[in-house]
Amino acid sequence: MSNFVLDECAYSRRLRAQCEQEGLATVKRLPRALAGSKDPELLPEVVRAGDTLLTYDREIAEQNASLLSLGHAGIVVVRSASIRSPLTDALARQILRKFKQIMPGWHSANVTNSVIEITQESVQLWHAEGGKLEQDGYLRFDRADLQEALLDVLKTNSSRCPRRLPNRSGLS
Amino acid sequence: MEQQAMPSHRPRSRLGLPYPPVEIGPCPATQKHPRMVEWSSFLPAQVAPEARSPGTNTGRETPPDLMTWAKKVSEEIDAALKRSQKVDHRLAKHVWMVQRLFAATDVLSGSVTVDPQVRGGVAVLKGTRMPLSQILAEVSDDRSLSDIAEDKELDLGLLKAFFGAMATYLDRPVTR
Image (cartoon, rainbow over the protein chains, first blue to last red):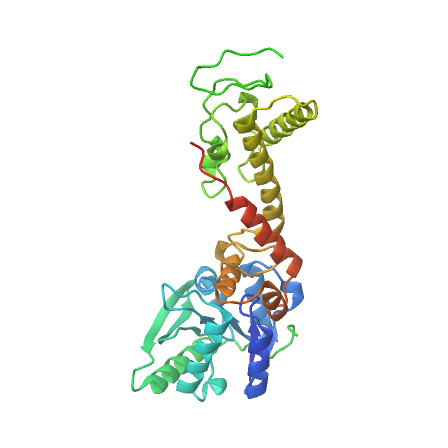
């Protein structure tokens, strides 16, 4: 079962309850000790805990790519692709629901070292290398081989960094 | 109180307050911080020169001399009203707006954080990583503040303070 930690912006009791109901992943809130924390303080804690970060923050990975270059358990960014519709919790839940329908085995995919941005219509993937984000792919949901292509990139990324990530520890 | 010569096109203070005919330009400090309030934008053209205090504030704080000026003028207006004297309503209105804006800014500075290292510099609710833009988006999605606060485990009082202060802050006409 995958372990997700929700950034404060992405945290919602409803989202957590929904995920718990599905029973496919463990979802928790960012520890209160990290409330209001700076991005460079937050990321090492999340990396140390070995949790996948779910956030609405589009910039966190790019601005802190150097912190991610040594390996991390994955960052999932939910974003609205529409220039007129701002991202809300309801829209984020809708985006995630759609993505899970397209990728039913998503909860068991290895997202280590991948930065995954999911919108209403596509998924984009990056990995951090040499302090920068390198794009791995832009996959539209209408693509026929979406699952294979996505899993292919995830597999490549998870094997990029030899460093063994810790098992869940610090965050609770 | 000594009256100063006023150009004919400027209203004259009936209180005899210092009312020098100076044009107040953009605050040097706010030029450095263009995202911050340009204090001069809502002031009457004849604001006392001591209120300008160039270089004495960072643009992120209330200019202290302007606040002092507004307080002093406000007290004099109040005193004049108590004595049933006529007051310069235009000046009184501007002073009231200055004080109101100061109050709103005080609340905003206590409820908002802008730090380039927190959420990439997006304005967030103080002490959290929750962008204010997202809270506005949630409200536009027909959610109540109490629902947002409960669902996202945020301080409802802080949310209310932010919205109240923003309402005050935005309620100011353009000075002509």
